[in-house]
Image (cartoon, rainbow, N blue to C red; front, side, top):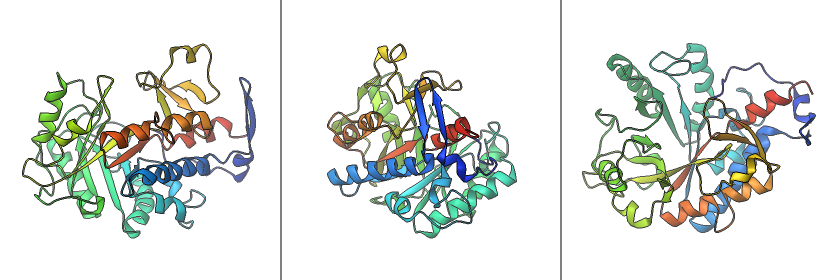
Length: 327
């Protein structure tokens, strides 16, 4: 995850020109390109399913017209999203189960409160495992009018054995109705697909953010029907995780020859997450993998019956801003 308190980058950054292995960065506004990407994903998805939910994770600077806290809201981007997710707001920014520096928390809250003021939902994932920190995290999230998930594993591979905050039996038809969520995208601890589905079905989370694929096989509408309702009978929302700022070499779209014959949109491997590769997300060939056609990731999400998508690595603009700074 990128760090948020970067020095303000001068405007000349966005008129950068740098050639890297034959690729020229020229007059690219990295933030605006990511905004456009998210907006177009939402437009495409809602052309198929008018109620489709879009939630970006991190990258809160995209919410304002120039990425600065005191700037005006980027209205088209705000209208395109149903909520904003943020990791590590109170715990986990530097190390799991450690308080996030107060300066970081306050900086992020200034952006997140713009989302709340717009009548949209703010989702917070804190990474902590000790009981006192879990309580502190949940109390802080609630006090700020957000909804939260306390992840006891950074890998997001378990359903925490903790009480569900704001547990209820209501039908949840819109994101604003939700009082809690489960964030579960790594299925390594579930021995078979039915184990995964039964484990989710036994919970009372209002929203489940989950991966589309179990062992490289897409979940189906029949699978989702088994987890559509909470254990107490209330309907819930099912949201599919999609990384749009990195390509993952374990996805259906990955081609092994890309490492030797790189497509124009493929950049370097993320050293913190092996198998994940930075992408030049403004390139049309990458965007076609994500949305706009019957083999695209978002179309598969829609076909499976998910209510929306959870867009990760939207803060990829930081990587390219840093890479091209001063050129």
